[in-house]
Image 1 (tube, rainbow, N blue to C red):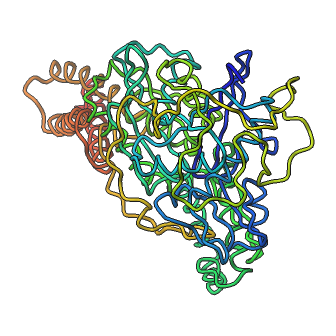
Image 2: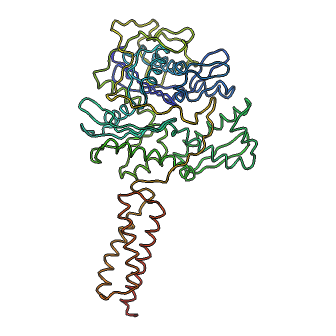
Image 3: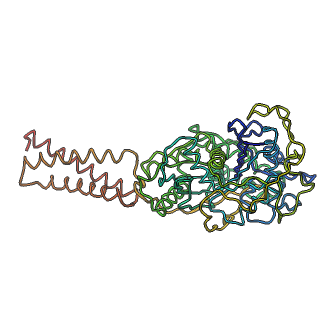
Length: 550
């Protein structure tokens, strides 16, 4: 249909799709009344691939046929689901087929253009897997857009932040499986990546592992054999309980972004585990410190002056953890932009980017050759093929019903096909890091990764508590007054006064050094204690001298 568009953000945990209607309205597609479609896939006994919540529900019947995070298996040829090896492009295409069916039902016909997003650190091989999956799903060749470029477009076009040419947006993207930090610069015709770095072993799944580790400390001491079965399931029942444990751990982590405490019930142990936000943040701080340090390093590598940074933008479901914004604010002195639904940013930003750029070629309905094994009875593009889950009888909520009837025949295109890979990002991808992580998550359920040793926090303001800067300012002001007063009262000096002044001066000198250099947390508080003791000695001595007691 003319003037319509579809933007897809295929994520590790969830997939988001946004459509633009003929009247210009942009709305997310709803899957089971939610804009988040779980990227999970389940292969039933008939060989059919179920996706979304249908896959999550079916996983409790036979977890061996379930893959919760296909995106983390992007570098593998196939994934074993039950007794069948399924090619990775086929897993991804099952999710995209569900997206296509919902787009057809909402728009009443095929969209004129399609845009998909991918991490900026992905190279040609991984991008080609997405293109192959789109072809298997019957989609036209999409334009590929780097996720940070789409996020920066949303920051400027939708949120209305002023980003002048030459200024940059720092995109902090913490998804379910990976973390990416990017510095995106505004140009005369859009945005481009200046610097991008990522971590393949930090994501929402790793934060879930902290919840599971807390449950281990409570349950394993009382029932070690039971917990061993949860960590290394050997039967269908154990797999079922492990799947439920990780699913509930994710829900508890999300609840802690809103509540001060939450509980996790472990059916296998018949025990409830309480976790407070303070406990969770204490465990998560070393992991999140790695992301903050990497974001600061990425900004330094981009060689961007502080005044050229238009803002810090938090995207990805993991950024709903309040500690992240707090740590970035302390490290940079700038309050980052945080949204209530950060998962929707990238998909909608890709749509706005596609409408702003004139370089996106028209879509073609000629599917390229695919290296992966073809799915059985491959559907014609946008011919409303069977989808991987039962259709919803009610009309979609994401948009009012369209009067035009849905298209039931393949669309014919007379435009020449574009190049196999179309990218809207102006900068080429950087070298791919090792993938998957050194401790990959095994199907059907990810094991609890062991905590990684993290170096001590570093960087400006690292380890300095809130309000310490103000306390030192007060102490400095008091010191200046006392120096003048005591010097007037006893110009010849006094050992008591010299000791107090020396302690206060040492504390202030350390504070001045820490404003621009890294240092340990313990030294900060030792210096503060010395300064406070020195100030107290000066106050007592001044009071005694004024009162005439000596």
